[in-house]
Image (tube, rainbow, N blue to C red; front, side):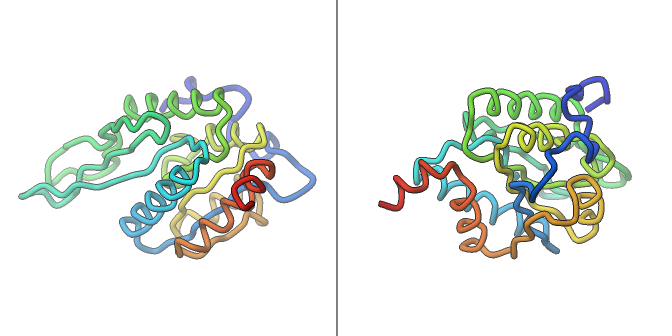
Length: 198
């Protein structure tokens, strides 16, 4: 996603984010990305089954015979639509495999979800693209500015970049389904949560 496509309200800098307290940002720190993808997908499915309105994306990876690297898909939590975000550059290709056009579409999905007023934004990961100011970084910022809680995954490698973006006091969540679910239920709109618990 090119810098020109980023919204002016969310340039990805710390100054654009709310101040005066901890952000409603739950961060699952992981070592294994494939396991983390599956875990967030499970969490999203369970929250949606409870009636919560979710926006954002979860990731799945498909291995093809004869390929060293998998195909990566993102699924829109609002519509269920899936999009391939990885480019097939062959087994010997090096460097980034992400499809910038696909990410522009995914970002639009997220913008639409925020406009509809979802209860929670799920972002599969804060990865290399986000660490460099691209990808879904601006979408994460826009959600936080709007007061919409965000839950996402981040590898130990990219955690310092996330903390530089959002601050040191992000809520770190263990890669455990029940712990992530508990945090999400806590930060989702209190009126909905109280109705669910009664």
